Length: 203
Image (tube, rainbow, N blue to C red; front, side, top):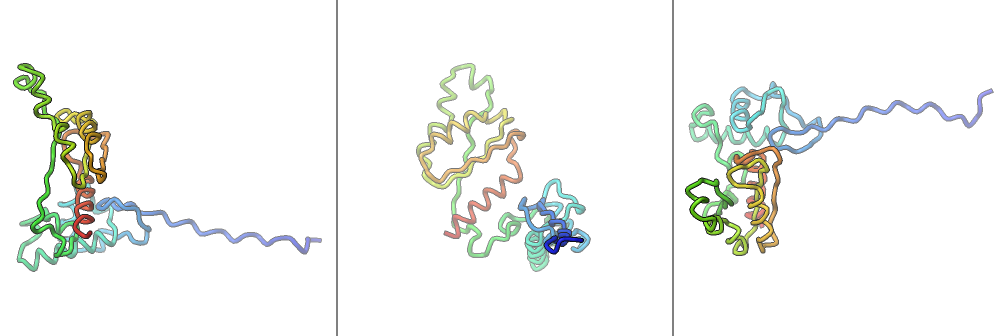
């Protein structure tokens, strides 16, 4: 005789929805917020492809990115500019910056530390290194700073970037380390820079 206290079999649990990693903004979101390329118009697909290196329509994108690119496409059409004539979007338009926070009147400096060890520079005197190295200027940097450090960079050696970073006296500093990049600035670091600028302008 079965026990009166026997528990009923547990109902099978539904499989958890897998998160979706958006290839354009690199955020992990709910799979339900993924937009298939087949659901957006061809001009929008072309615009996303032109502004997201490595993106393919089969990858899809998140709803926020689809909305942002759709707004950018509307702006291009409003100004009678076709997506073919201007495939690379201006930064404020690409990141969806509000009109009042698009940086008008703001001056920003981009610093590059280190230099290529050309014989004309290093063979006459190694003091040239001390003269050119931004390490000497690092203590003067007081503003919020975002730095990229590519560990395969043979033009701006990573050691000089680390040295400059540790000599900066500002408390608002941040370094992104990219183990597999050379001298080029990684595309994802542009997003880091733009988000930092947006945060600065909104304050």
